[in-house]
Length: 308
Length: 176
Image 1 (spheres, each protein chain N blue to C red):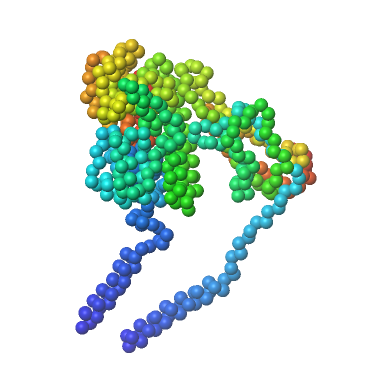
Image 2: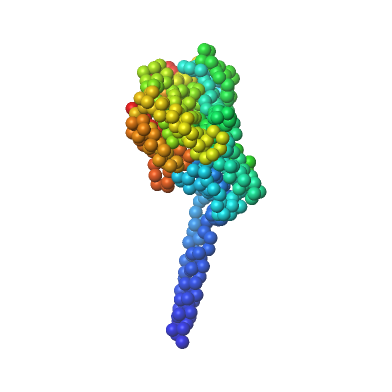
């Protein structure tokens, strides 16, 4: 009898203790499921979004590191993810092949913003087709526009915390300025005549314009089959001629594009592969290129080292 | 016997807690002292001299910003236009200074830095500077220069100790 009483007391005390420990602790902390969700198309846009919203929103990305936005085919899980979103963000200007992100958002009835609002585009004329080069993030000045657009989109949906988003955006823009100045100093170590950048596809025009490089690539602005995109014999020939004419030391592969073609061109032109660049996608978590700042830093170091 | 013992123990514990709470309630309460700010007397004039034109850049729309951080970050000047360095910027009858330490926060944009060729003049942008002079009743109260790293905007705080009256300014000056 005494044993039953003691056991009962112990169980009741223990149960009360467990209940106290498992009850929600700090009030005011939002649980993960209560936070609003931003779904982004590309890894760069997702990184920018995280810089703006901090821990106040969840940020998800449809593309995984290393995936090509031009060629991406939507999966069932993507529609489910977008269905949970409070806000969708895309790069825009058809970087997302066939506008897959916009279609996902529209089908789910979710608001979608393009990060390119207000960016001055580079116009490409390829085989009679005029296209806007969507790879604008390769200039940190344009990246500043991206984060400003994201801040405006988020603040419009969460006015209460607008000042907080603006403060983070101001800090990140200062970091982008520091990055830009660093890139200027690094690239200025290369004579302009040596600044010939040959890559797998025509993604680096904004970078080239900003830092005094000339771009050449065997594939157009898109790795897909859109007008002006893809590999053509003329582009391949022009890339090889450019390498020989300017005595280019190195050409570069990209993390999100099949390196086979660029390796063939390197062999044809008798040049080395200078390294791998992050282009349409950032790096895996834990890699040097897992963030936009890291991606740009590593790209510049690889390019300058490869062309010196 | 045991229930009586348990009851006695409970009374002792509860009694001790009650006694402690009474003791704490009886202690003198902490009086927080709110410092009383005295407005500084006199006519204040701010003079800013730029080493190069103030202009916004791609990362920040502001060319010139001057605020008083300790007065709720009150804005004295905020511009998004290009401001020539040819003439000093003068702000007369500046109000808001208190007796004691004040602060001015200053931010000056230097425009965009572009690329250059190796060894060219564009290779290394000049560091920018701004000289800040604060006058009280036409006497220089504070003079300081803020510098920036090459290509970076100028950003910094100037601490301005303001005696309560201009007579105290003179007394301080005569001590030097």
